[in-house]
Length: 185
Image (tube, rainbow, N blue to C red; front, side):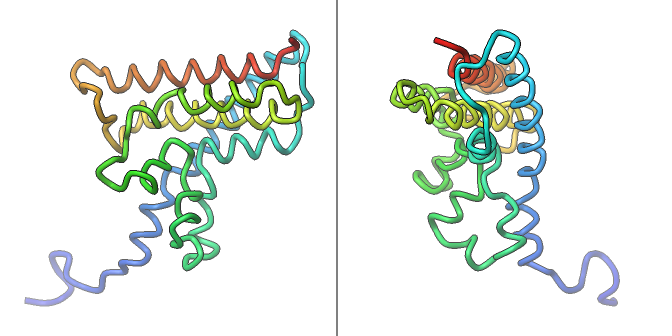
């Protein structure tokens, strides 16, 4: 028996936790950036009703991946309760609010939050771009989870791919909401 065989050795638990927490964030953000570019290009062809700027991209970041890179920069800070929620995309904030057993809640993993926020902020022109970005970010988060099912959607049967269809349908609804928020009235 030696310590060099069969997986024996030193385990770097902090590195494993860091990798697990930040693994999908880059892909979610990249998908959100692609979607944001496509929606902005589509909206420009028909005329933008709002000015796009950094707030649009911040909305995409918050909705898609959150500050997924923060555990690499400041591991101690990123472990604080509220800050930890911000290291994930908006639909995954259910982890902070409902705990691990509530992760994948169908209300969070849907277009309901972007719809509610757009219903409240649509009348304020300066809020429309960041809210559109947030809706696009949520769409990217949901689309990522439809392709890479890292959690199951609660209250949704998983038979026949219904979870993936739920996530994909809600991602499309989020993109429609974002497009609606960016167009002229």
